Length: 294
Length: 304
Image 1 (cartoon, helix red, strand yellow):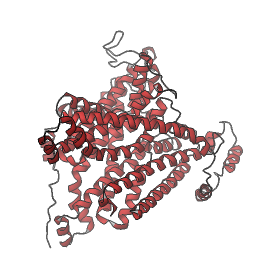
Image 2 (cartoon, rainbow over the protein chains, first blue to last red):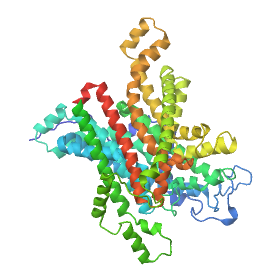
Image 3 (tube, chains in turn blue, cyan):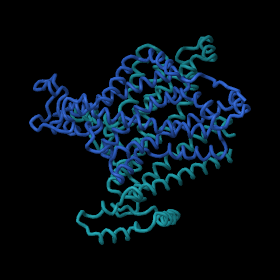
């Protein structure tokens, strides 16, 4: 029996994705590509050791200011560490957290949403109660509980953010599946003898791909903000890893004498999050105008 | 209708119970409060004695059973740090947080609606651009960074507003804007798109064709219809604001529930953390319940 039932819309192929990226807003796209490259090649790019300061060079201003040094283009912090190098290594940490969290929540949320929407009944009720509970959970507070009791660690941050943010995917995807499963192509697939797993992953999944892409792009900005908030509150990744949130906190009490210590990481956070959010906005308008309310 | 409300209420209570269980387990599995409570040089006998006194030497299942029995009698435990019942400790901070969050939600609803209407009625022109920029920034700036920048500019440099703490109306300005900006952003966006949709509909064209003034059309006909989805979002984000208050409260040393919870976590004050999280969760779940019910009242299709 070979009844191939085509999904309602074609899944995204690599070629289509490239052709499609052509119309993306240029500046945000350039920013995102830049920060990804920097994150990837961080150890090669840092001009100085990000964790070792030179005591003679404490709180040097950026090169464009009087008394600034060309060797330390963005200035140095309270311990004489090069801010540019720390920003570069920080990009690596932030991007790693963001990437792993997004993958984690996409996988959990998509599977839960698909299963919940397709199965219905008790399975649906149980999953939706878990989703409600997760959405009602003060995520920052959960992160604090974990961060302090389990100690600051990279994986604590990833686990907390990932485990809280899958619920939004699950809820939205379930809603879409509820509509999709009434469509003819699903009924045909069922008649053709497809197993529920095959219907879910081969026929339904490609149809919710757009929603996933939009949500994921918008989530990256959120993850960066949450991670830096946690580090700012002292429960983020450990001291040995430079992150933008910690750098911002380091300079908090020196705002009037050495503003660049906080301003540089602050600008980095803002521009990267802005870039991801603008890309997400654009992707939403192109792929899934229904999601405007997000 | 009554069945619908009862069903939702039951769901809300189950969700709340699951949450309380999760917090209970997480807080006990991931660390030992006794080490934090006692001085560094305390002997292991002293640690064990305190552990016993606080009931932490029993199994988690047993601790949970005792906890449930106490909760049933209205006893949510005593704060390790303040040595008072948690229900006493939480009262005033909760009020402070509610004040802050309520001011923020009012502020952001008003500003968001104004910006949303301006953006939709001037589509593509500068008021639209400004409104969209404000909302994009609101979604992209972390609250703690905004708070620090505000303190630097308006308190330290210009000296216009107080840096921290609780007091007169001036103390509210910076925390309210810091906390409410994100919500302003989503209200603006949502209202803009729902206004655009409504402005494009037949009945608006009819109203215009009848010769009604632009103002009447925009405010009486379009805005009223466009506000429906916005009201839901405002109800739901109120809960998000409450928990979002943690960073804002820490930055502005606002004596609210968020900061209390933050300090309780830092000192591993289990009963207090548990109770704070429970209150936060109860507020959010309660709000969602109210949103659901009011939605069902407005739209009979949902009751099924």
